[in-house]
Image (cartoon, rainbow, N blue to C red):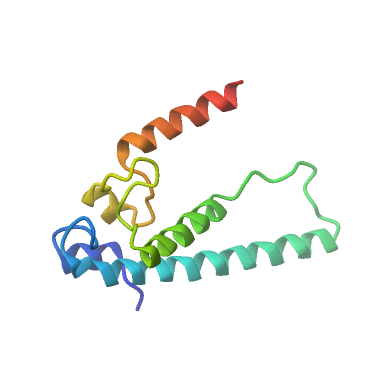
Length: 129
């Protein structure tokens, strides 16, 4: 059985090591690994479906939008890499600890709320130029 958000909430009352009690470190790492496996499986399935459609001549006239799963896959891989370097739970922009509630809600989060908000605003401005 793969870990769930409920599992994370019941194991400890804080965030993974580096920001709170160590009791969530392994469940969080396990959850991220399971998400990685699931996302990779979904992407393989999507690739096979696209290949089948292309071979059958049923390709869409317009290119597909970027897949949200591909973005999440990258975030999960990056979070696991931060575990290995001891930087998990700290913002990749400012280095401050990421809020424990944020890590419980979204274990692959790489930015604190302030930096995430600033990043989103910058991305929005870049898209409009």
